[in-house]
Picture 1 (cartoon, rainbow, N blue to C red):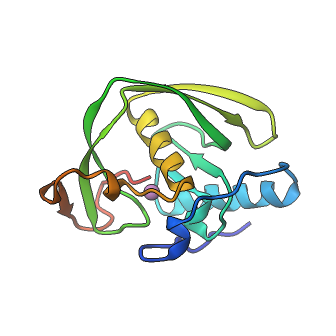
Picture 2 (cartoon, rainbow, N blue to C red; picture 1 turned 30 degrees about the horizontal axis):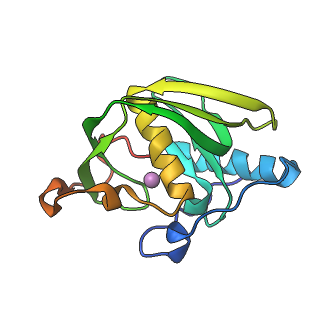
Length: 163
Ligand code: CO
């Protein structure tokens, strides 16, 4: 178990489409443990495998005051509504931006045991799931900023929750 280094822009792996996990084996489980530790140490609410240099479709998430969870090979099967929110990313330190995210979503995938799961989410969790699925497709929140004026410089590591 280890905290891994988080890749930041302009590292190319952040722009690659990550590969599907063929089988949830011991090495994948070890990677997930490391990802959870890395996310918690960075005080993030989500982390995608490409952010620790592994181009696989895995994300870990942890909402404030809740237990962490894992989603492998996630598929967005439903999205509804639209809202403007502020978002940041551990791989884009020092910035936040205003973008549109869905109000509610449904995601299908596998958990850390390789079991099929279906997650219905709203609010911050829907935002974080969309953010992490974007990472797996090589997309960053800054790509969703419609106007340059909606990207703000911030003090890195204040009280911001960053997926
Ligand atoms: Co991010």
